[in-house]
Image 1: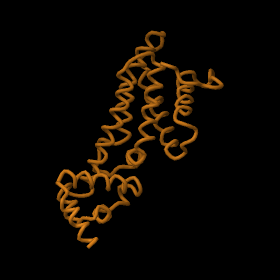
Image 2: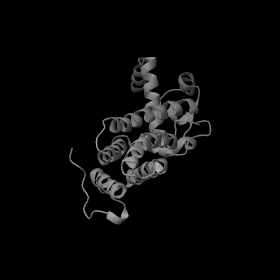
Image 3: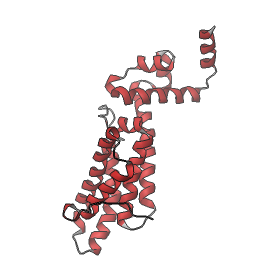
Image 4: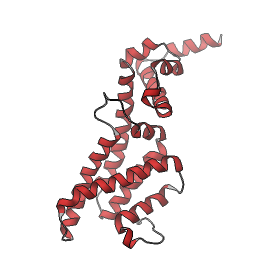
Length: 210
């Protein structure tokens, strides 16, 4: 009777519901095992459906992986873009962007694990590295403006943008597993290094109150 009940519940799923379920199942598996370590058989078994159902919705493992990555990219891009678009003092923008990335990691651990793993050869775009490059391009314009105001060469802004965003991203990868100290403390130290430099580090950095 229990088996019949499960089958009845599964059969009542709409196509949209089934697709969402498969994406959620695949997301967890890709986070646990990576792309290469996950099989269509495992996705189907975890979702309690047959393999043809997965193929029907996504065409294969690459298809469902692309959907999972695209969803995570949109979530992270939205968070980072929102932090940059508000405007304000450059230091505050650095703080917001750092907190946005760490906040995404905090609430989307599985998604971030998928993004920072090596993607399949077929996945040429939408990778974590390409996303970070896009964010660096946005930061580049902010830095160029500040460099010009301070009498420095704005042509060097792209270099500093890559360093700044890369530093935050790599620290985020470390914090994904460490989770200590807290998000705000990590963000404060990141901004301390990015804003003050090693020669002017504050002993006990705190975030700007805005």
